[in-house]
Length: 105
Image (cartoon, rainbow, N blue to C red):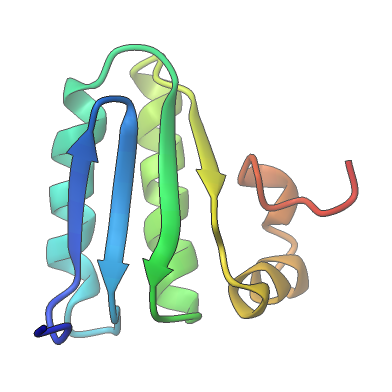
């Protein structure tokens, strides 16, 4: 299994993100996700369980998708974020802006 290139796929109303994301791969992945968000109708769940990276570029990408979803009336909910990614979001004060990240509901 080659996990060098991250991928984003849509299965029904679930957008799955998998692989390792870094500064060299995040832009293409963000664009792929934007196409999926733009074509979606209704609530879209972003599944991060297979994401292998906890990095600030990942949070930036997720925020881009979140803003696009808001502008298209496609609410996003995030699930399966690793403890490290959730901690990074909290340290960056972004956890409350990413539905599903805030551990203190």
